[in-house]
Image 1 (cartoon, rainbow, N blue to C red):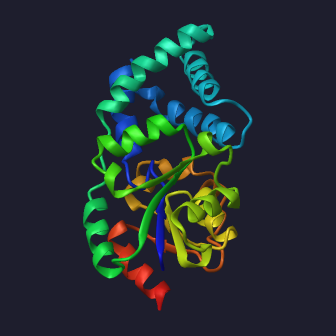
Image 2: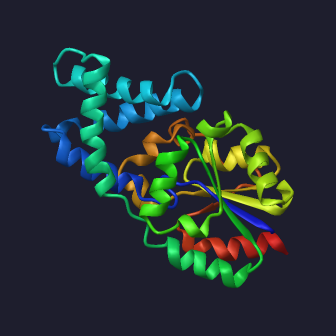
Length: 242
């Protein structure tokens, strides 16, 4: 195992906690929190599938929540202003999961020569800003963001590109992520070892319903490993390296 790739949101950064804090601060009706989560899942998946732009998926979420509040759909500039205010609260909540730093330290001991990278669906600048904010930018010299390369997970090409940038062959690399469909199955289809991070806390909070594969009852593919915490990652990778 010569390289380990990671997803960002929901894997390294606690996106759910930041989102919930932003919802509580920005939405006047707490009962709408579930609808905001649903809109995020629907429209971000549309963006990841190339059916709308990054900005448009934000606007669709804002229009949807206004409809849920019984208000008229706002114009584009009003959508952008509403989302910008929401983002201020969201950014204030950016933090790494508690298991990230211990897992990276253990990984450095178990596989000292393994290169690290991030493969993320999203715009490059905000995703790198997240890594910097949670203190991980220097640990991941390679960041492949879908908007910058024109390929999104689960397309095998984005994982192969990340391996190329790290100078490793796909069979000698693993990818870890909280989405079974986009991360684990996508990586496996590119010849990497796919590892699904199925956090119990995320599932209990309702985020499992946001993950398209899990919501559809799609089981892990053959050869895909499942872990509940990043603390389990070094041992799983060590076993894969034997």
